[in-house]
Length: 89
Image (cartoon, rainbow, N blue to C red; front, side):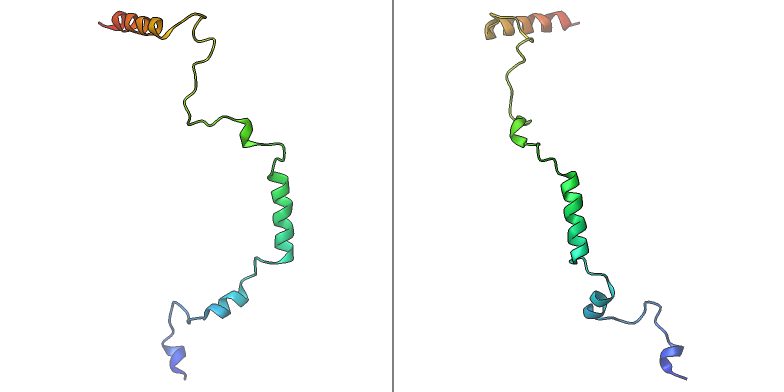
């Protein structure tokens, strides 16, 4: 009787990296590259451009319909003070 059969390791024998690479299928094959390109072309929108959309983190001017024409910053501050006074309990 062999001592390896009596005292077997539940974790299994140690394998080298070369053994593991030879058993696992390679990802850098022609089939993989072809499928990758096919899916990339299906998901990629060629008409999309990020330059068409503004940066969401930059401050924007108020919407033109938010304030009527002729509204100045002084008038806006007066209105905000009036609103604050009305909201006070």
